[in-house]
Length: 271
Image (cartoon, rainbow, N blue to C red; front, top):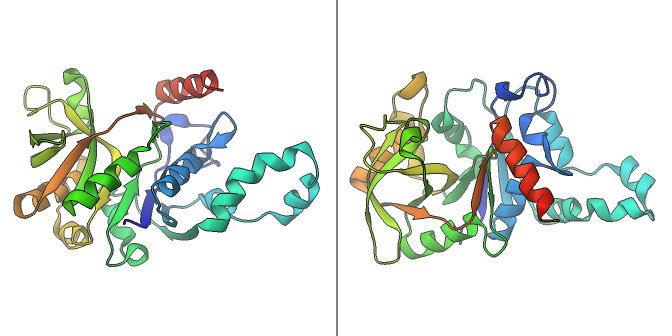
């Protein structure tokens, strides 16, 4: 069972300026809960209680959020507001949190490599909080964990994307298996619609085996001069097995204002 989860939160959030000048974009709330808390809750639902964060300068609010605040807790004790912190306090009680900084934002692959010491020689999940994934029955990480239990290899979450937008995603070329997953032959980072082998795009949920770190160390900067996790997975797919899971649920691109508003409206409608 996968017990560890690495949450990538080192980006600047420039699409939300000026709001993100002093506030981490991952701390922007969907209703009354910061985006990054949804990621931790999804990990815990999947049985992952050892949580690592890749952060950057100006991200101390994330550490403070997942820590005790005795003055605040004493102030609201016995009031109606006390219950508002119950879900967060449960996470603090059952999870172990570790933090390391990504000195430069050199790509998703580089961010994962920064987590090598805190993930160790164990399989682990990776979450990009910008992708808010919701399924009231079984979260996406739990779905990926079930696939990992069967195949014991890297698992990536994919969804159908408009063909005209393949240049915004890592796209898989894979063979569908009997259980509905895909055995990946190749992953291509942000291909044009004319070059895309399919319209299944990789989204911000993965389960990775520790061998990925050795591959990332040898991965040259690719698209936009960054070290791409997609490129490393593509290398691994040539020598090992990589499986893609077309997950059940909704995904909102909360790295964009449109997606953030859409997610907020959806969550408000579900109250």
